[in-house]
Image (cartoon, rainbow over all chains, first blue to last red; front, side, top):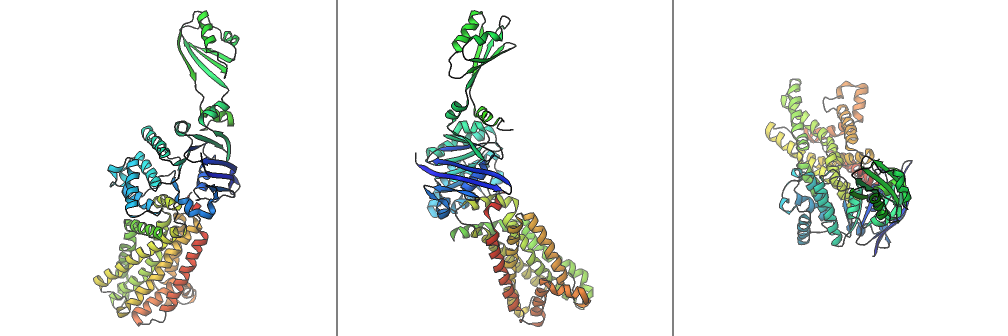
Length: 312
Length: 248
């Protein structure tokens, strides 16, 4: 994939507080790159520097190999920004909002009309185009917030926590629409502290904490890299004849615990031993009701990296 | 240029849609004139003179208070959020603050011309008779300077609340000293001296000399002074305005 943005040694301080500590990363054409991290990790600061709304103290940002400082106008034309806050004129209609913000990107006449229509259809707000924004639900405003950012068909869409404060249905709608943007050839940079969103849409993830990038990779590769154990939850009919120590005879089992009628086993990843655990239970004539395993999550990856939960 | 025009049109429409600002720039000034004119009419040989004095002095006061229109247009909480999108667009930073100055100026200017029209037609007040053109001409750079002052204060203090509070207090003090409510001319001593230091006093003197004495000798200095102040303030905005101020 073609490299579209390159970030080198980016740093930023607010007074004594170093919010970005010389970070480097690249963005490839057509990917959904998600920035995951708790509040204060430096995600929004990174985004604000990439949108050229904030000056960095050091480092550089290159768009298609050229520094953005020298060609800011052209660079900004290729950006669509969805701010964290709903940035709309409440007293105006949906169409007037999209039309105004899109006109700032040099579109006019029929080209502007077509772009506005397309964006409103994309946001599924075409039938509400003449309604004032103040009459919209939170989810509709969020969708319009995105429509205003993409109407001029930018190369890169930067979204700063665009699903804050909305219901799950609207969130899913927005996540689906982000995937559609990618299918249309746009590159998406997405910040969030919701790992479920990252798992749903990302093609690559950058995990940030305290102004640094602490991990980078795909959803699968990060879990693979940082998750070196797996958990089984086995529900049985009776545990009377069972001792947790019995399971340590099975290769790879690190920990076993029995509580009521449930057995929890932590096993080393890479050792296939579930069949032996089941055999052990069969030998003791214990009937199994249910078996499940915990899938590795980005939450556990983050916990391993920082010793903290993502939303702590 | 197209970007600037689009932003200017939007800012101007937002101002017109704001009933508080429309009321403040029209009804407020008329009400003040009526109340103060009525209360002090007994002190004047001709009661109409009381209304005329306050019509002119409150017009100047409201023109200067136009600075609060531009602070609202620039950094009012609900306006600031959509303005953030303008920051992200490729229009550059100059059209962002300059459109606020120009739209506020035009809005205030139209409102205050309307006030003159209403007071002239309803109370037959004197705004210079044949010399009214000089009054209307002088109003323009003063209104512009006031709008530029509002945006300049926002660039310094970063919030509408801080900028508006400071401006409101400063303008009220200058207006008080300048004789908006009652003249300090006859009081002598420190009060008369302090009054002479207030720019509001210079404006009052210029406007009254045009209206009552048909004397236009002060028009050029006040006009030129207002233009210079406007230019300095716009230059100051260009140096102080940082897009990141909008992010917080």
